[in-house]
Amino acid sequence: MKIQKPVIIGNWKLNGNKKSIHDMFIPLTDFIINNSIHNTIIILPPNLYLDYIYKIIYQKNIVLGSQNIDLNCSGAFTGETSILMLKDIGIKYVLLGHSERRKNHHEDDMLVAKKFQLIKKFNCIPILCIGENKNEKLKNKTKIIIQKQLDLIFNLCGDNAFDRSIIAYEPIWSIGTGIIPDPEYINNIHQYIKNYINKIKIVNHSEHTNTLFIYGGSVNEKNIKIILKEQDVDGVLIGGAALQYNTFSTIIKLSQLH
Ligand code: PEP
Image (cartoon, rainbow, N blue to C red; front, side, top):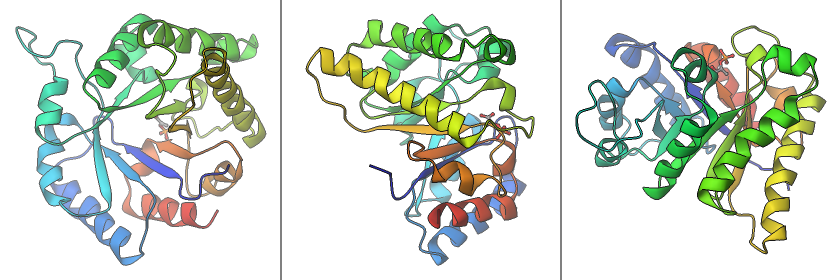
């Protein structure tokens, strides 16, 4: 069944400061309240600002997530963020597997699977990014790549791995390029992911619960409606367009009307 209130996630990446939080983010929280927006809006600011923003959004219709965690929970790991620290300040969503971390920090599928396992162990909600690069797309390998990314997680976490999780299909060639796949292609891949997860569960007699399938890559105010119209798209993950008040608030508003 088509989800009525799509989830909208804004990933700030390495952007933002106290000034932009006050100039852009606080007006956004007011916009959400004044327009009676009831979609789940998840913001992923740099970890450094999480606690600061958490205090500002107290009792507002926005939730926060972290862009990354370390595999270790404490100890001699200079510069890292622990899932225990995130829980300590009230954060429950964690992004992982983003292509920028895979590329810039050499995070492979196994490390991503281990992080996924850790997030689940502490009862938090993973937002897992998966998807193919341009070369893989040209060679028609999208489904093989995705299957490999999912299988390692199934192996570590079992048949119910993806319960209470968000899976973001992010074709790497679309991120930050202004190019999006045909909406039917997006839907087709979402269906594939959904069916693959369900097939493993059905074979092993377990039920599919609470997995959201969202799309990420160059989403903006012009294409949000055609993307959300697709049957198997439960929401979107947004990078660049989440940094401007006007653009992001327009996207949120349009997501209500799809
Ligand atoms: C992203 O980095 O996950 C992303 C979707 O970025 P953009 O919206 O800028 O393509």
